[in-house]
Length: 521
Image 1 (cartoon, one colour):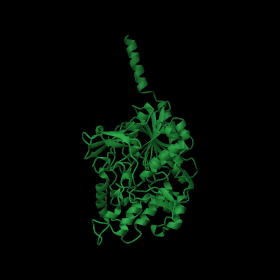
Image 2 (spheres, one colour):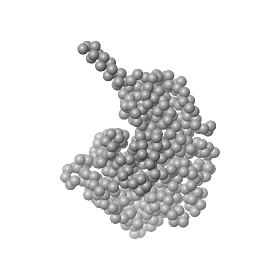
Image 3 (cartoon, one colour):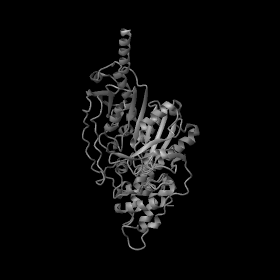
Image 4 (cartoon, one colour):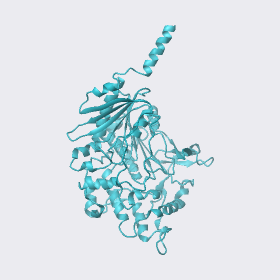
């Protein structure tokens, strides 16, 4: 009997920690197509120190600095660094992080932000903490800039879609070599540019991932960049047309006063901003300009900010970039300078000219040129996802209603286009959208905005249907002060009428009534 027990314990330990097919250092000699492994080494528990990332020269001087990432709790992992060269002009850096123990048998690719140009260490750390073998790429260039695109069409393709695919294929091979078996499933998790990368993967490479999480996806990429530039130019069209930053809070308070209680709870958050038909004219100065009112030109600017973007011939090419609730973040798109990601797109992709400035912007000629400048490399959003869905792929999309940078309504539009193209049966089975009231770009904001997307997706994979709600938290000074359910698109969180409005249990997801009007119209 003792021998049987000992044998069972040994067998159990081997099952929990399978023998490695290769040691970490042995991976340095792994031969893979168009791949040079430059380093493979064990990083002990809590020992990882990310390289310093300089602040971009064109960063908003008033923006909050990046939150320092804490890797002290990171478990030991095998860190593999490699360079991929699918073309002569490619120089794609990737890192694959492999938990030394506790691997859950799965692979997770993580996305980038802005113009990429760096490995996503924080996202890799989160993947490893959760037990995944993780992979990240700089997408083939260094630095959060589009300057690489001038004269390098292959590098633009790498950034557009090829780098993430190559990272995924090589990353899975490296994980298989280390653990002695292939991952049982794979997931992609990204927000902003990472959200665009996520949907691009579903479109172009449906076999890469079984589950895809796309947050605030910067899809319809060039039309969004074009809208950002056009909106910024419109805001600066006259000496008194731009709404100064010191008026944002005044405008925001007026919007909340008019619309906050429409959802039944006055909490500083608009559950559905599209139901807010706020008329900016109520803020127009009766006399001279002042801190508590808007000039006639500023009122018109506010209407433009809440409206769809149109070409000079009147065709709509972008939904509204902003909606009620975003006022505190207006400086991102309508400040003295255009948002850097769009500015770089125009300089380096549209005009291939580092000397291009906003002073040269001509709406009549530049908007049509910009809308087709990338030839679809950065803007593929085909709603026909049959190849991905037919193999059981799941797509979870989320977007903050208060996003001041990537239009929240683009996610709504894409979701509706997919449902229109694929049929209503794909909802909950293959795709679901969660709009997040009061959340800024990928996080932050007055609404509950902290939630476990990966756990939600794992639950979906296990149960077969998308979550009927995802509980989100709002954190102040390190403590949770509010929770609220995030509902599938078409539903909103409704207070039950009893209990604290800061507790998710006192809310239910109910069918949303159609919006009665649009802001500013």
